[in-house]
Length: 351
Image (cartoon, rainbow, N blue to C red; front, side, top):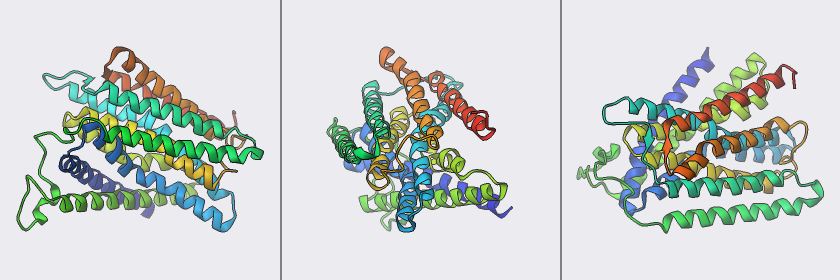
């Protein structure tokens, strides 16, 4: 009972943090005169990716200190689970938000996104994640190959960030920005043009709320799973990413409701690029032996194949037709259900 209450408290904390973050990050982009793609695909994506990035980092550190492989397994599960959730469940939930918006007069289910910006994100994700997964097939004798892949991934992400910030400046926030939530803390009450340090304070406070809420949520879910006798692998691969990916989904839904579609989708695709580069580098460098396709880890790495398939089903039509629809995003839910079926079948001993 206590674990269930803690889960609800953590969820409320994540919700509050996500709302504060979307408001603050828009003001951050406005103050820095950044393009909308940079705000959604870099600032928002990296910021809200922090909770799920912390889990494998902490797990790897604990594994190094204790010398055990259990923590490494938790880390690998969390790293694989994040892109999977973003490519499937996050897309599905955002698609539902688009369809709900489409019911209002004067709207349809077409998203007003920049296909070039979103397409660049998707291409970076596909190449980077393919390299990371390919490294898992390298034999132990080629450990240096994993280090080389890690270096390439770091370079790719640096070039990706540079490309976004080199894009046309301006448009990081629209003219109808809502007042900064922390604006009342300003003694001069500059609510329409808050100072950058106050904007930064709100963003940091929001991130703190999201991170604390995610850690509490995962801890509560883990305790509950332990009492129910559920395999911890399922927590790290399925349930934990659901909790820690919640900020991306909430931010995207909020921006869909506000009609800021490029920010919404860019928040998810940018996080996919981040998750395919940075956390995988942690595994390749600090847990190279655990980042390997084996009979024990096959179910986990199968999630990568599902993530690739979902991404292709959603975004290849967008690249051909130069448009993205809410119905198209719903495909992610089908791929998520397929993987859950594989998990259930594995637990039942059918595969």
